[in-house]
Length: 378
Ligand SMILES: Cc1ncc(COP(=O)(O)O)c(C=O)c1O
Image 1: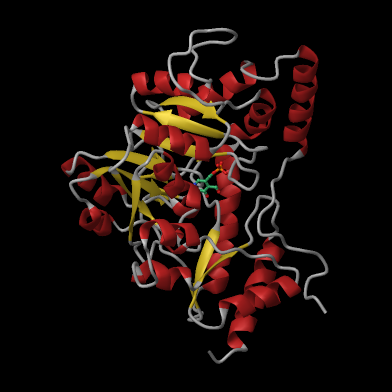
Image 2: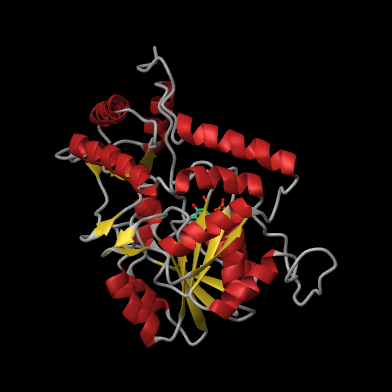
């Protein structure tokens, strides 16, 4: 018999009644107006995030993947260039390097924070290194105090993958304002949920101007405008922007709710040696896109299967990218290449976390997880 009569999903977009009515009336107005792309809602999303991420310049895109691709193009990545990335990330972080003919070089993570290890970045720098992409994983800010000197000393371009980190703060400074480029996602499960969508923030006005041309098929405008670049269709449309717009002004409230849910998870799991909860750096405010724990006991696959049987959905964020079949084939990575990342990634489990999750559901997940672990001897 399932423990819970209803599914506790791993993630779920949530639109409260106010957001929903704003979205529906704007969708209706937009559909009737015929201005389905490149209109006032896209502009309002860009204005909001340009203020939030000031002094960065912000362009909307149709995904974080597109933004990462643009960041690599604008960073000048090409054949023979190396870009240092963590391996415990979504493949898009590394794929963007490959799109441009560059080589992703995977650096180890800090086993406590699960974010890229600043010392490992230093060790991975070679004569070919041109850029570093860091990921504020799960919305937990990376160790910028230790990362920035490595970037500056080696004269590298810093790209921040902020797919999880909308509104996350490192020492009161927004994640996404440290690098030359930062890339955000509005995938449905993200801190701000969209029907897909993304942002590219650039520290340099000229890079932003070029990004806007690349996003829009290589043109400065619409219609038969002059094509000055081989561009892409990476535009966010008005319907995507409307959904983002309804939530963006409530980012602090969204993060507060996520922070409270994570605080409850932490309280419930504290003192249980079967589970380690990742370290959050002092003076940071994570956005808490996700809540990942490290299992010290029990078989992860069996625990996941049993949780699912009890209507509790979990995920693994992430399986190391360097060991994915295509990366092994292209670059010859083998198990043992990144021992810390591989050990941690073999034991991580991401637990349900979403805006409409109740405290009771957090308690139910913790109780079931701990009882499953304590019932095992491995
Ligand atoms: C760390 C990270 N980077 C990039 C992406 C790609 O985002 P998108 O789905 O918006 O292309 C994701 C998506 O989940 C992600 O988790």
